[in-house]
Length: 484
Ligand code: SF4
Image (cartoon, rainbow, N blue to C red; front, top):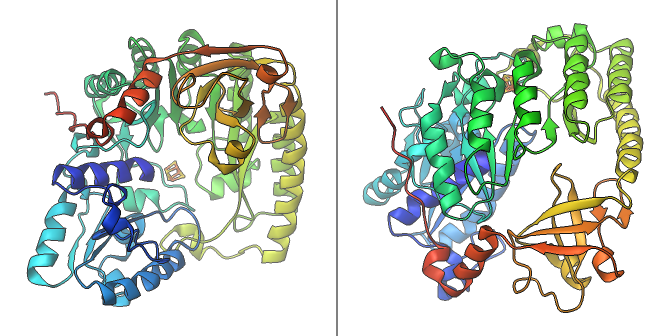
């Protein structure tokens, strides 16, 4: 959600005539180690889901203070969840910040920058609720081949460890027609993959009173001509219904991957977390997903050491993890978020106990992830090639991408195939897995005389055209107007 919001901030600024600093070599040349990039405007989009967000923000701001002393006209803006939470306190702690804006008013960023410049004084503006749905704002999309599309913002749940409802507000759903219009627009610009975004996609439709709206939406998005891969994040087990499983299984473009947060395997802890499903319901969903989509890769989130969690509760989490065979899991040590009910609960679990449980859980999941990954050796995968394989890839003449089930795959390129020429980001490759590591697959069949088939895509073509035409590369899509 935050990454997509950053795309909107960039889109808004570029619509106002600002350009990315990388395109101005004389500005980029004055970049310092503070992370300013040499830019005239630095926007920090904060997230408070992970611990230490504020330490990191003020650490970054501390480094930027020196740059600001040397270049007083440079402007620093702070947005996102932490800004929404801290408001004026950001400027009290870092008086060299020019603009503070929240999660509900991204649209005012350019105006606040102008106001701060004119008044020579920090401009702080936070809204309590959403005035403009973010998708109506211009967007500078990072990727040619893959696009985020918001279907809702906010959340009506009240999980006791989570600050999101407080910072993002109640759930607001976009109408299906608007979502489809945006999907069609991004596909027309070259995207072959779309990820539908919402804090809780399964409750999509509550605000306009349509049950089953998410399943219908999946089917409708899946039918958009030219779209090859549909993903979504995040579902919530409580509202997960069988019609969604059916829609996933029956829509060939909906990818066989599901990220569904478990958080805890103990019903007692789930109750304390105010997560309104129980272990049996979670396990039942998994069973039905596996029955309908046997090759689905299922991943999850788990919190260890929630206040009051006993060893017995934790054993139940281990049991669910053992039975569920997740492809991978994001595991977190519980840490209190100020302002959430769980932060004030008695019975906080001592750190060493938490750490010990965490290590046991990670060891178990690593074993399962490794076993799960091993199944792929020798199998064929279809990989959507990513934009940047990183230095490691370059040294080994490999490229990277994602398989249909979202696994990371590295591939070696056979002679005569060059990245950016014969094979472009956004194209697809069919290859065979030659080695399965726990968290990635290697599909070097192309250099071992085996399968290596390039499937050129429109996304690859658009990527290629953008290389020759910088104006296209910087294109900002206008916001999608509301349909009434
Ligand atoms: S479902 Fe729970 S964890 Fe997820 S955003 Fe809503 S309150 Fe937070």
